[in-house]
View 1: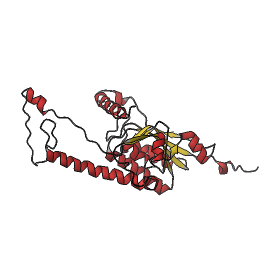
View 2: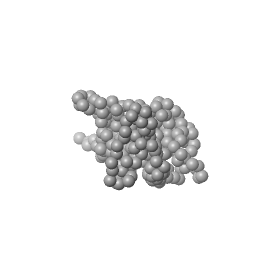
View 3: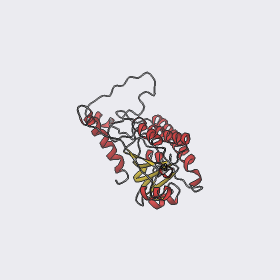
View 4: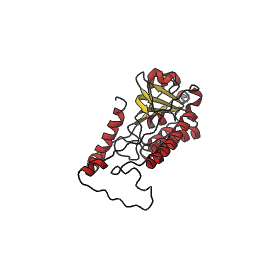
Length: 266
């Protein structure tokens, strides 16, 4: 009996990782954290000897630290295993979402995808006049003159704003360095792409923040053949997050996610 050699013609495999949601240190709901997505990413690079890993991204951003950790994990596994990474943007890959996209070797977008927002933001509120009108006195005692920096119940201090600007600038510099390291050769000389502005579809391709207009299946079939297998790895949500005291926290995360997506008209 002639032995079968079918395994020699085995169809290539590209493992697909879905990364959707706000990027946060919290691991509940749709939130993306290094802790919550690490098992998916690790499995995608290990299971079935993949020819490549594809990231399907839909994130308005969030925590710069978690963005950096997830992006670094993707790069480390890609380089250790010699497996290329392709990113496919759905609605948005902005701010931290673009940090994740630029961890890939190439970035593909829909004509209506929103990408960019390479900047850092800090937002708060000032309620000192409101509480003063209602006769409320704010009492704060600290050891360390900077411990109550930017207290929303006290008037804003110029030195606190200057200190915050320095912190944001350091994070922004790290973001810029990451994008330049990953996309530097593809970015036009002299273009200031790091203002926090966003671009859509073809314009993002034109300025080097994306490599072309393409969707997942057609592009991967073009790159790896018509018979390419595309198993999907995505976060699962059980019933526990909807029960008991965690409901309020999940509602808060959902509202935060909704607000971040709304910034890009989504």
